[in-house]
Image 1 (cartoon, helix red, strand yellow):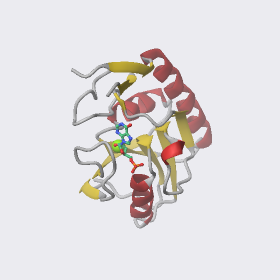
Image 2 (cartoon, helix red, strand yellow):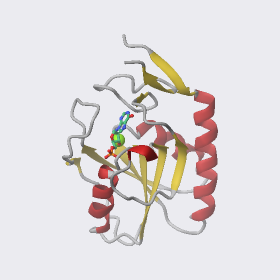
Image 3 (spheres, helix red, strand yellow):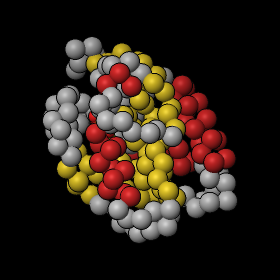
Image 4 (cartoon, helix red, strand yellow):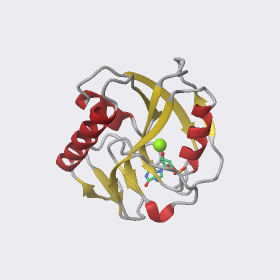
Length: 172
Ligand code: IMP
Ligand code: MG
């Protein structure tokens, strides 16, 4: 097995998620809120975030694919699973694991806005600003990280390592 070095520990992730939840709770006070989990990478983050939100939320799922089995984006976005509920007039919060070039998010925001939600905001656990190609406005960022390929806490390399409780990087 390739070696994984810890970048963000389980305890640090917990702290980051709690802080984000507090901020989101405050901003959406008195409003409806639908979390949109972007499969598969953001499942762990969405679950923990939702559990820390002391309020009612809707949760729905979208699956897109942009990477195939490579560690660099091939530029194609493939919508693999569509939302199950209507989001018309709802306040939507996209929950992502990581923003790299921004291509996936740019596509997702355009896709969701066509469904006429009341608002669309974006929350990501990790952000690699150095890699940004597409300008996307991120409303909630857990942590900015350097340009390294990371795995764990939902993030994969060839569909492996998602179940690591921490975020680490592959020493390749
Ligand atoms: P973007 O479209 O280039 O912003 O890429 C976003 C998607 O690529 C994320 O939702 C991840 O699924 C994947 N990705 C980007 N960087 C990493 C990484 O370091 N580790 C694992 N997946 C990544
Ligand atoms: Mg993803």
